[in-house]
Length: 109
Image 1 (spheres, rainbow, N blue to C red):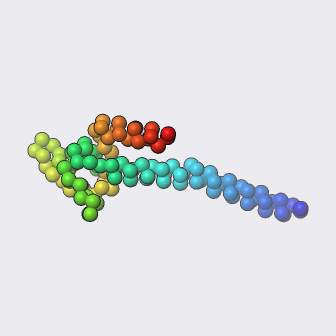
Image 2 (cartoon, rainbow, N blue to C red):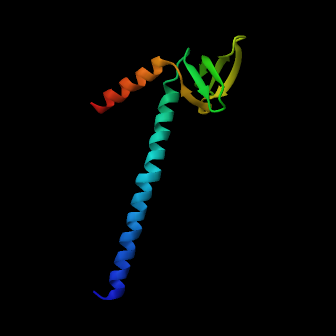
Image 3 (tube, rainbow, N blue to C red):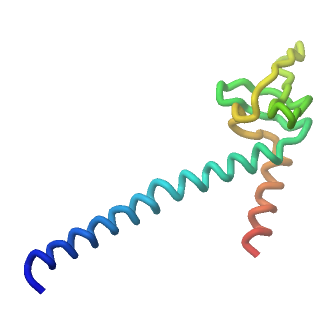
């Protein structure tokens, strides 16, 4: 094995290590987060208190799976606003938080 072959092997090993590092530090966490968000949106129920990505807080009064939208009530005057499900940032009620914890515990078992 001459010096150029050794350098070529070292270059290939370094490149593979960089690709593996990118996968574990960037790609994998992003796909895991995306999966959790999709699960949260699919577990959305009428009556849940939510926050949108725009910061609007309200209670879900209607969910339409055909058009992937939801209607929420906001404020004291119960104004109704229609949103796409992808605009959901978080579910605020404790019922959903405890249900999510139970689901995670069941998956670990």
